[in-house]
Amino acid sequence: MPQSTRFRAATAVLLVAATALATDLTAVEGRPAGQDPAVVVAEMALQKGECREAAEALTKASATSPDVALATRATQVAMGCEQLDTAQRAAARWQQLAPGRGEPALARALVAMKRFQVDEARKALSAWRDSGAAGNQDPGRFAQILEGETESTIAYRVFGDVLLGEDPTADVVLAQATLALHAYDYKAAVKHADRTLELRVGFVPARLLKVRAQALLGDVEPALALAKELEGKLADDDAFLAADVLAAAQRQEAAREVLQRLQSLPGLAPGVARRLGALALEQGDLLEAEKQFMSLIGQRAQAPVALLSLARIFERRGDDERALRGYALLGDSTASLAARTGAARVLLKQGKREQALAVFDSYLKQHPESAIEVAGARAQLYAGRGELPTAVAVLEAALKAYPNHPQLQYQRATMLERAGRIADSERAFEVLLKQRPEDPAVANALGFTLADHNRNLDRAEKLVRQALSLSPDNPAILDSLGWVRFRRGHLDEAIALVERAWRGAHDAEIGAHFGEVLWKKGEEGRARYVWQQALNIDPDDELLRRTMKRLTGEEPQSGDR
View 1 (cartoon, rainbow, N blue to C red):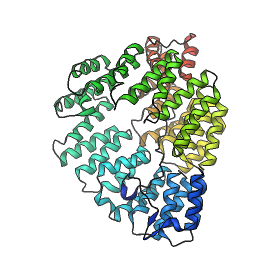
View 2 (tube, rainbow, N blue to C red):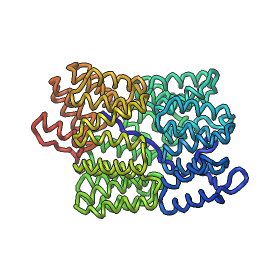
View 3 (cartoon, rainbow, N blue to C red):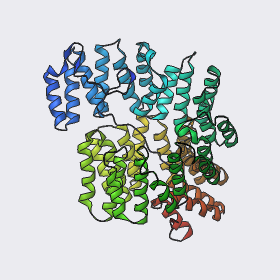
View 4 (cartoon, one colour):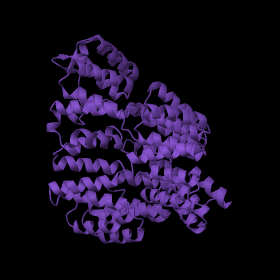
């Protein structure tokens, strides 16, 4: 299956000296950049919401000016506005004017990583390292910043190639282990965790990471044994390590027993309730889930997750008014965009189209930096309503405002396939593959699209295996390979691959594929069980419902209770 891409939209900040602190670069290099006419014009454009025009104007002015402050500001604005083509030019000019500085090299590295230009990212990050800027950074924090600004697979590769070195500290190796875990390379995560422990014996964060990686690999008993050794040494969410391992292994009853034992311990009740609520949702028990999430409403740190979960429960029950009230309560919380998307979905279902669109418009006025995420949310909303041409149009309009943005390009190619424009989708993915040959998401999506339409299965398998070599435990890619093998008639191998994908991510589309492969193998009872689990997670998933009806001849029932 195609996987979702994840980028963090920059909020008009530049990561100077590898920190995520917002920086005011209106005065750099000894004089106010704001005195330059180009800056004045650009700032006026920004105030009018003309972000792209401001970035382009600054970058054009910087190209013929020796002013480092102007180049700095041009890069800041272009990156903050997600104008990646412009940002690449601006950062190159900045580095040309200040060749020994670390900040422009880091800016170039970040833009290259966003565009999946692996070689360019390595060179730029090496220049940042050689500037001496790396010496003052906490490796774990820096790795977290790289991953937050780009995509986990490239962050893992570039960090390791440039910063790991021959004689790394334990903190550097642990940072690489964390990136490996998030990049779906669990064996590498275990390897790096073990190396960290050689450098710092008994280091709890490394032991903790090793447990999580082992659990994700399916090595449940060793993971549980190590988790038991860590009992009493963990705080906050890490205190739920054993329960999380059991839940990841689909041993829900055992996980629930562990959670119930933890419930009475000081400070752990909110974490227990959140996890019990999630387990109940997976089993379609909406009453129990509601009870658990209701208990979190008074907990400030837990309230956004609880409110969002409750609103979704009400929506699943068809209680639109309570759902809308719940979404509205999230206001400007961390879950604001997800809540507004839910509210728009309910309003569209009620036929209130103008109100639904206004939900996004008001959010954009408050958060103009989130335009790309909003475009993606709008497109998914329309697609879920079956308005696929409109979904494609939304993404194409966004691409005019953000030319060549990798996230939007990928989403458009995926949406073209959903809209039945298979040839157009394949062409779009082929273009992306030429631009980003080392991006596993693109290779996987093209391979899956070919396989799903029974076209050029040899190439489909080659592409998916290429993606898997870069992200070997990625559930979306494992599902794609299983689907290719299914299309080629290798049912036993397909079952093993898609089952592994299903263990890694209880996603409705993976569940649809897993059930179909089991059904074709003659394991109809097991197929129905998997489909029911998938329906509990997403009762409205179009592919899942269509697959079930096609194979069973019955209308799917969600099983919510």
